[in-house]
Length: 222
Image (tube, rainbow, N blue to C red):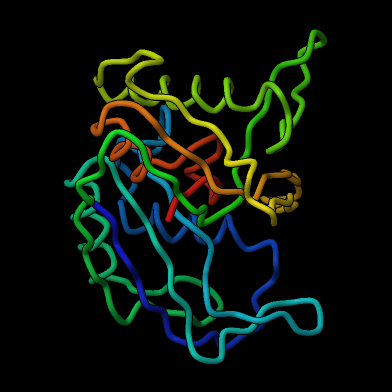
């Protein structure tokens, strides 16, 4: 299930490095004992939409829209209950409307636009991690492996035939974007992705996103 939230305008400047505030609001709504705190993120959320940059920060004079998606319908319902109790998000923004969106009936392949940069990384020989971008030869394999890991965590059948992810490199405006979470900068790719396989796997990707850090504001799909 996907929740499409409408937020009121901000009353204070919104710093560009605000993703951890969105994560904090989400987990506040889910409650301290929710199972989504640990393990692979079987949910995703996009970036706030409707803002403009000015003087080194963001402003949302007409409010913002925000998409949050869950593999577990019960988690989505808990999120709604949490919003009803405390609709505050950050910097004076509050949720004033929640619209539920059922999972579409996808076929065996779909090209998704991204709702946040897609982060993919591989482990170097020295144990450090290298960011893989949309034009890297290895990135599709890493994205596919990450989706397989999440499918296994959700109890779904896993194989390359059931689920494969690749960037759509025919997209003329592919680029990368750097975003910061609590002082750590992550570089992700702004480029559509194609998910191919069983319809169940395509639906799963729509909900949980692709790549890493989907529980922190990366890899969400439109």
